Amino acid sequence: MTAGAIPFSVQGPENALCLDGGRTIGWEMAEQLRAENLLHLTAVYVQVGGGAFAASLSRGLSESGFDVPLVAVQTAGCAPLERAWKSARDVADCASDWATHMWPWEEPPASLADGILDDETYDWVADTQQLRRTKGRVVVACEEDVVRAASIGPNLTAIQSSATGTAGLAGLLSERAVTGDSDRVALVLSGISRH
Image (cartoon, rainbow, N blue to C red):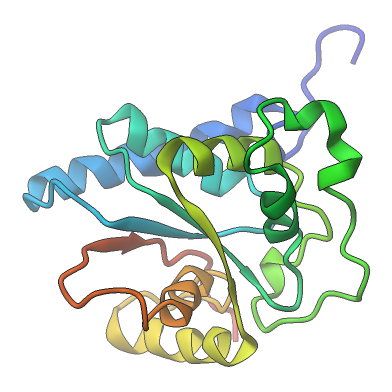
């Protein structure tokens, strides 16, 4: 490390280069949206575990001219970002008081979407900044919606996504009562199912 090595990490606070994958997906989404002449979205639903993916994807969309409200989705079985968002949404320098807003989830995390059960949302500051900037929100999906999304996603698409990868869809299902039929939303189906 003293010679300049970069640690292997998928968390932005440890290695900012890891954010380029999510930003690239945001750029590619913007390119595809333009190709399909979909120039306005109501929201983008993104599953959140450690948080780097949501923040960087949202930033990539923004850098490409799509200022879309970020909807960060966690499961009821582990939702530390939602807790932090409630206390830090109006705090400009929330990182200076980290422990007031972010601490490990107290209960053993549990969900079919097991790939996003991070006990802390390590990139919560970046997520909070993007949520604030895009006028987004955090949605906590109930386990029933997580299970439904894990079935619906692969059945309606050719993407054999895992339950973790369909957790954004679970968030959309959770908000179905407030999402209009004419709303245009994007979500990411990621993480192949290995079952």
